[in-house]
Length: 241
Image (tube, rainbow, N blue to C red):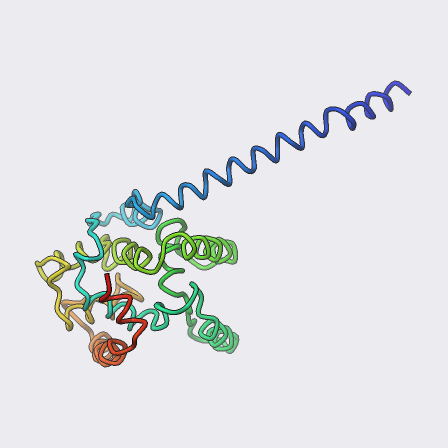
């Protein structure tokens, strides 16, 4: 009887306090977590997991944050043309491309990705490389929050500062310096298309020593840049203040 009485008292008095404490703790953690994500709307992220991995692999770490206004519009247009042509209009996810990728991958053989620039930015800043359902689930969460908090220009700016563009080379400014000995703001159309064409595998392909595959991809990116450069949504994103 005494045990039942103590349990009843615990259930009545102590358990509600524990529940309230856990709930308050969860709310505080969530607020702090959202606050960290929100902070990157204005502050450059510190070194990321992907960048740490490159350092541990023995690559030199090259990165220099610059504003979007200091990155050539040619490169901005090139990466959109190469990686995510609906970037200016989707809400973070290209559902049509995701569906096509799923059908393609179910057939076996080569694996096709369907990540938008927003998703890649979320992965590059907050997560790790590789394929797993856990990472993809977290990627969806971070992408959703970023789209709500940052806006397209900031997401593009973060992408162009954090994306790996060569072994240990992160961001547009470091890539421009390394490959073409100039600032990111001075990259021309072809140089921009070459960099963008190497993004799927920047450790394998080089903008300054383009293989046949890269040369073919560069020609395609240049043609897409001409097409996308006339689309109202893309022009508004790239050229309006």
